[in-house]
Image (cartoon, rainbow, N blue to C red; front, side):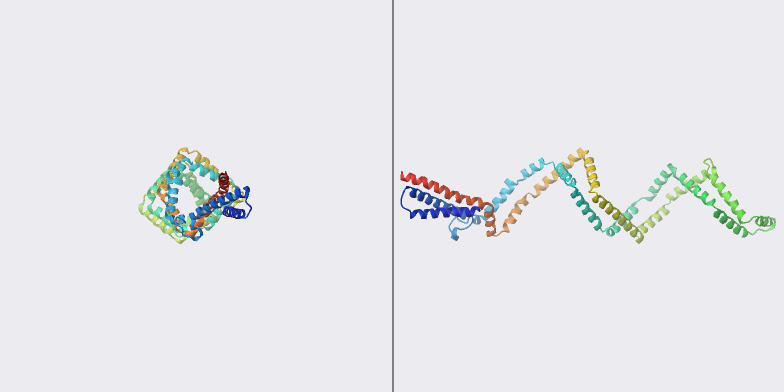
Length: 413
């Protein structure tokens, strides 16, 4: 039963009881009851008037000093604001509370509870997968091209190439490259089709040679003596023998070739015109359509792989996600100094935010109360505190009844 209805019923009981005793024969019990009901009626009416006068005019009559809340609306609002700012939510209490809270530990505990739930992990992976699928990778291509072009434009390719060349030579990569090339040439020159090609080329070129005199006669006799197969076999043997000589570590030819390779390499990396031309070529290629298509293709490939990994982990209940989180927590847990500094930094930021925006609490209260009309404000207050105030009426009627009984006994004595 609502307290307002209970208060009205108690007042009605007192009124009915008083009226009923007026028509009963006079005796001691009737006199006592009449005095109790009379005092209870007076007390209930007085308390009804007092409670009603807080919120509105009783019976609609504009009696002085009634509808007190509406008459003092501005004072009420200011009192609420003052209570919120200075009593309930003052800056000192908020700051003291923040200083007692271990923000990083609290956040870590909340995250751990979150990641320990399989359903939460799978939902998180599903959300991440949807985010990855919605990423506009084609819009990122121009930014990547611009960033790469800017880096290449500012890069000192000559210095970088010199360092790379020096490092390669210190590691013996130039010698390894020569051996690799010799091995490739040896394999190529040892093929039957290579022998046939060399013989054919040599035969055609010898036929083009024009010599006179005895040299011409001797040369023509030699050309007539050998055919393309013989020439090919001779040239193949010479190439194979030369390659074997180059492979010998103590070969003077090998040392000379290595020296020439190194000289040519340093000449190349120190040639500013070639480096500048290489940079211009790289810039043109980076900003062209083929580069854009290549970058977009690579980004799409990365997206497909990422989605596949996320879906695989989602099916398995987010085990990899939890493993990554646990590894991150263990790694951060070892950095106590960093954690302490982060705790102080976050707390300081929050305290500064509270100090700078504490006045907004009062503003928010005032804005919300100003948006309410008188009827809404009264209804809100009645709903929040009116229920308890109605018990004043009930208590007034009951206490009045008891006091009436006592006074009647005293009067009779």
